[in-house]
Length: 188
Image 1 (cartoon, helix red, strand yellow):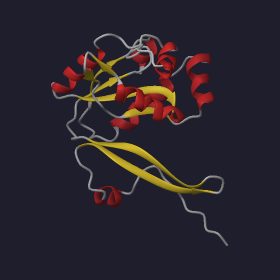
Image 2 (image 1 turned 45 degrees about the vertical axis):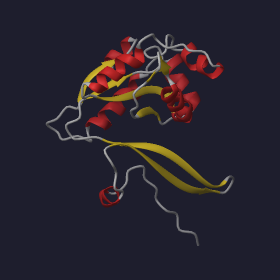
Image 3 (image 1 turned 30 degrees about the vertical axis):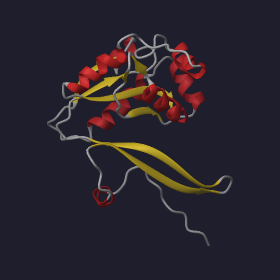
Image 4 (image 1 turned 90 degrees about the vertical axis):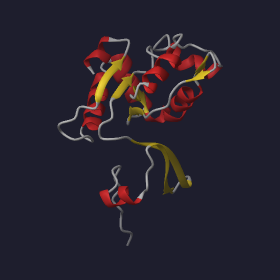
């Protein structure tokens, strides 16, 4: 008789304390077995910030890129479709003591490509500052439906921001500012 293990996306506090995280970006790996694909390993970035962090949140499509739709496609064909000066602006924000977090309603299946795009974004010899990339834990079709058909990306974004907020002490609001290009970003 096989016993099913219960999986969780949140480590127990004792496991988190044993992990020896360093301030800033940490690379973590999760391994699991699949009957179809065998042993799989997924890498992710885990950020450790002070409880007093001041976070600036940025949308990706239409905010960093010049267009919501073309911003998805242009990097795939090697085209630069970014707003001029975005790397310099965000680096100045970081240099003034703020943490940057990227929030997009893109599907989690787009995480590797989104992270790669943000890590390689270079303007005038300046690379974009790094930070957590928060994406919707949905399939591509669900994320596209929410974004394109019902036009309610804020449903995921607001839920995500509440979850991040709950990681900090009740008396501390870590969110300092946000950048977006749509009314739904303002609502978020």
